[in-house]
Image (cartoon, rainbow, N blue to C red):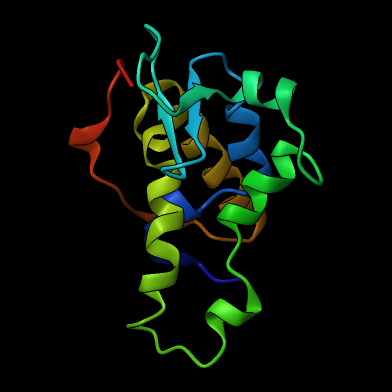
Length: 141
C-alpha cells in the first residue's frame, strides 16, 4: 500500500461501472454522433442526443448499450502499447471528455468523490491530491 496518491484525476478515478450507473438517471443524455454524455436536469433539445435510458430501450446492436459505453471508456491494450507518457494523453483525453458532464454535475461529483475516497482507503492511500477544476461544478448540467 502507498500512503499518498498525488495528481489524482477524478475523471479516471472511479470504476467504469459507476459511470454506467450514473447514466441510468433520466437527466443523462448521449450522442452516438458526438460520442458525448450530457447532463440536462431540465431536458435537452439538441439533435443527436437522447436519454441513455431511451437508447437502452431501442438498442439494436450487438451487446448492450452499457457494454458499448464501457468500451468507449476503456483504454485498450493497443491504445496503450508502446506509448510514451506524453502521447498516451491523445488516447484517453476523449475518454475523459466523454464523462466530463457527469463529473462536473454536483450530484455525480459528490458520488464520484465518495467512491474515489473509499477505493483509496481500501488501497491504503491516506492522502489523495485530487486534480479537478472545482469552479466548473454545476447544478444545471
